[in-house]
Length: 189
Image (cartoon, rainbow, N blue to C red; front, side):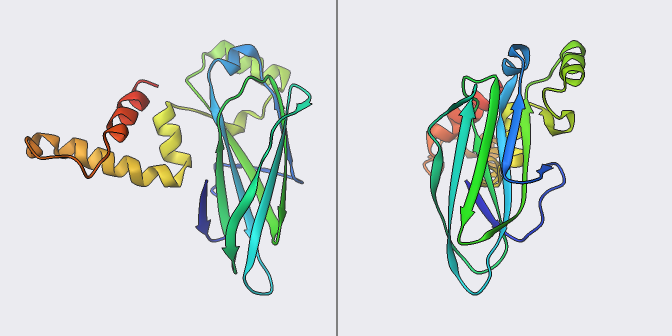
């Protein structure tokens, strides 16, 4: 979860009217699916208020465990970005509600691995998903582009990996080894 000040939604996100996002995906697309990123721009009026959220997903027509909690206390417009990992679903809908503030904009993008042309045609012909919402890229590129909190970690990892030849024999304790393993794993996706 990332929360940033400001009220502008990045242009890559598909803006949704209302508070529900829904789509269907084919099994072929699911095999390439990396996840969904929500972007919510909310406003707070009349001083500082605590903002609560509730995300209610329906997978294949059945309600699943949602995600809810507090985003914190705010006194101005902010943008909330939330990554949802792929689950075992072909039909998906999500309803978002916010209390303590007002949702100004709700948007999303879908990340997937590189698709072949035949799959793109099927998605377009069957109108299962909005083609403009799909970003084809590796998982590390998708995370870096759409998840601000991961950008800082990735920059640190890149800087340390770039400097590794210069730092032979120096303890890299400043960066947990799990990040290096994570980076190596991401580069294969």
